[in-house]
Image (cartoon, rainbow, N blue to C red):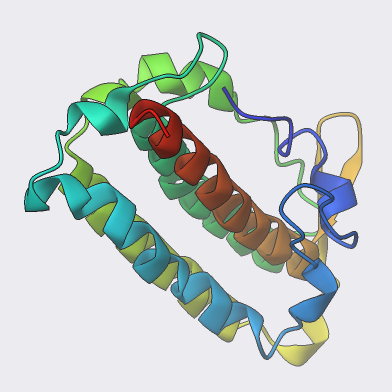
Length: 186
């Protein structure tokens, strides 16, 4: 299960995360595209390690019913990258669009996260990170402050949305590591 970072989106656009220490203020328009692109590399090893002899079941283990598996966290990050790429595209094309709410909890079951091939998830993270990175790299200097709203008027800027997506990817690597350690009994 997600740990609430999605619900705190506005906060994580500008404040350091007390759990993973991600500091969004360390990523301005110049650094953000490369940092997002780097998520692909950071997810590759945990998702493909089973190919080197570790059981794929390790990726599917849930330490408790209210915690996602490592594969589900990776699928979530894959989808966050895509969702926020679309949201940023809308913020660049429309004046303060209503971005709606993506039910990330429902997506785990509806999209059968834990039945997806890990190598395909890793490839999709790479593709989605590259797409979001390209979108961010193409943002005009005067467009980083363009906005969109999500449920109850929660305001995102283009810069904040990019930072939030990067935080999700970074934070959930921490979750993936925890879940894998628990699944391995360490």
